[in-house]
Amino acid sequence: MKDLTQGSIPRHILVMAIPIGISMLIQTLYYLVDLYFVGHLGPASLAGVSAAGNVSFLVIALTQVLGVGTQTLIAHAVGRKDRDDANWVFNQSLLLSALLGLITLAAGYGLSGWYLHTVSSDPATIREGLTYLYWYTPAMAGQFALIAMGSALRGTGIVMPTMVIQLITTVLNMVLSPMLIQGWWFAAPMGVAGAGLASTISVWVAVILLAWYFSRMEKYVEYAASKVRPRLSVWRRMLGIGLPAGGEFMLMFLYMAVIYFAISELGAVAQAGFGLGSRIMQSMFLPAMAVAFAAPAVAGQNFGARLFDRVRATFHWAAGMSLGIMALLTWVAYAQPMWLVQSFADDAQALVVASTFLHMICLNFMASGLIFTCSGMFQALGHTWPAMWSTATRLVTFAIPAIWLSRQADFRIEQLWVASVITVYLQLVVSWWLLQRQFRRSLSPDAAAV
Image 1 (cartoon, rainbow, N blue to C red):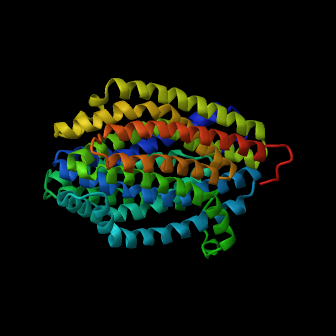
Image 2 (cartoon, helix red, strand yellow):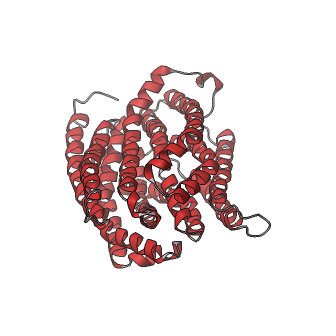
């Protein structure tokens, strides 16, 4: 356990954000490595994997329910010096991770066909997407155990073991992907199926290694059979914080699904280009997201210790860091969008769609960085509903114009990117206002103890 209620706040944020960022980059490399090799299989394969990969937002939504609730409650418990409560939360998180993993397996194999027919009208794209999900679904199920253990460590201020394990398994994925997708060395070429299988093997190796770390090295929170039986009072606390955070990512899934639906009549090339561009964009968000993910642990421990000035200072430092990072990335994406995407596909039209997307959508990068920071602070305070309402405003303000635009005779895909940029800034105004209101409620001298 690391005490974050003492010492330099920016140093705490950076010390946590750097390994978190490396971990997130490593995790994203799972997708980028697959995307690199799949992109050279043709537009249908790239579009299918990209559309299927959007399902990961649903899984992220569920992992956020688990991870945010776990990290926040453990951080609060650490701030109060209540180790018993931290262990109850950790063990209940393990139980929920097993249940959610089983639900993901059932839904992944039962509903994938319906989803892909909803977002695509191209038979080849649907076929490739189904193949990928068949092999990738076990990887999504394994994410819950990783999130439960990684969030528990982050709540105690420890991030390095997760980073090291993800580094090891990403190297494994980078070896397996070309071998299974294209048949390098002794393997037979599996195409998109190989991409899914490579990720599944890598994720489950990570689960095994992290479980080993907990069994041998971690002492502050640890597995206890007596605390694994269902305890609904802990579930209510975890879900009360985690459900709205998961709702944020559910709405992001719907936002992406709206775009795929709106451009479905433009064909596989448009969907492939958008899928490639959006994956590159998500990878560029990682440094700011790392800061936003570090802030809840720092602010959460200080909130649990009722050091409210340090909570506010954490927000100010995190917001400043995010703005600086995103300003630099905005310049890169605006000036050199084609350079960012050209290695990931052979189809010239798909590359034009992807680079145009990045050239225009980068105008919302700085606003997105601040939104991430606001969401992280809502998590630290244990009140995550405002973040979900903020995301909901963006979905509503974007989805209705996007669907209307897509039905017009002169519809162009660039119109969606303009609408997206405008609605992100509207979301920022809502997020900022809601956070300042929550600060007044939660950080006043007479606020109720956690």
